[in-house]
Length: 115
Image 1 (cartoon, rainbow, N blue to C red):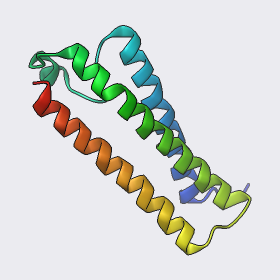
Image 2 (image 1 turned 30 degrees about the vertical axis):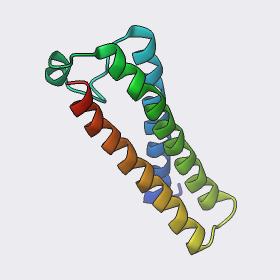
Image 3 (image 1 turned 180 degrees about the vertical axis):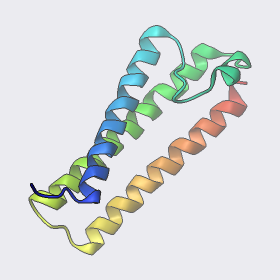
Image 4 (image 1 turned 45 degrees about the vertical axis):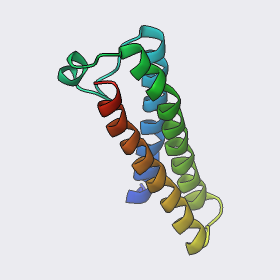
């Protein structure tokens, strides 16, 4: 039995996280309910424009989920098929972290704009 390296497990988790974010985004749009993944129930009770919040978060959450999935897939590709250079890996991490920060800032902005 071979051991699975930590980074490969991390890549799979990131792929599933991205898929889950996309799933919750589509569900949010269809059900018109913001999931606890994005806002707590307590925060949602203070929301003055739920429809505007959903419209604001939807495309941003889809983009964040897609980048998460692509980052995880790139990691698996790097591990099993073709070993990227350190520069490429660094750029991928910077993109991933940049989109994560961007989405976090969008959530903060949404809390000030729609509450």
